[in-house]
Image (cartoon, rainbow, N blue to C red; front, side, top):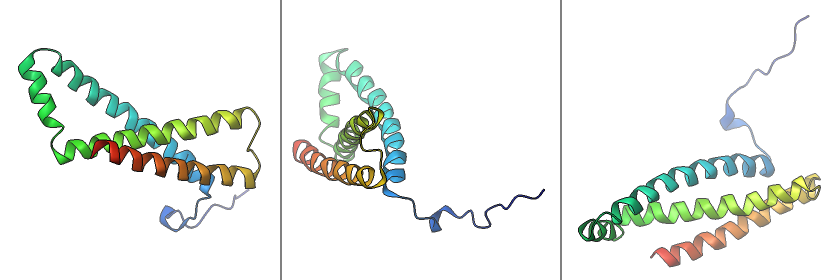
Length: 124
């Protein structure tokens, strides 16, 4: 018996629902937070070794690329926290219907955007 298989596997032509996009981005933000944690723990370790190393690490935070990485890490952490709470609420049996799940994803994106702007104000 031959099964019908999809003919087009080009993911750029597939329109994902907002809930799927939120879920995929939640996993990606978890990876970003994990990598950022390693970077910042390394910087913390380096800054605690001596006064000269502390001054050197403090000078890193004057560079735009480091500020951008710091902002991106804070944004990833905010996204992961907001959508982690959303997933926990869904585990309790709420927001599981299509309309409420889509609305909660849109609200989560809005909250993350506000937190990202606040993180940008904090960093710069």
